Length: 124
Image (cartoon, one colour):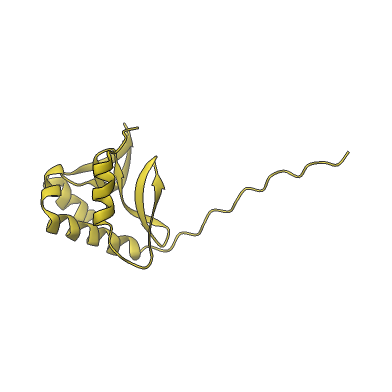
């Protein structure tokens, strides 16, 4: 898996929206932002990815973005990698990140997965 630089981690932290329901946590060995348990943006190596509805994804793809594939042949179709050139366009980045947050915030909240119970030890 690609590793992000500290610069990319810092950049990611700077563009995550301030929102009471947003949490940053690890995903794919990288960093991702979640709202109500739904991932809406993240980093993968040096790439910034966002979760968007279909029409918005198409706009990003036409502008030079690409579908996010954490492994070759395994696309996460709701996620697109933002064009690298947009890092120099803070208003564009913030707009697309806000769209991603709005989209994920409309999804049903994810329930935490149940913890697996350790098997009971038998008494002898």
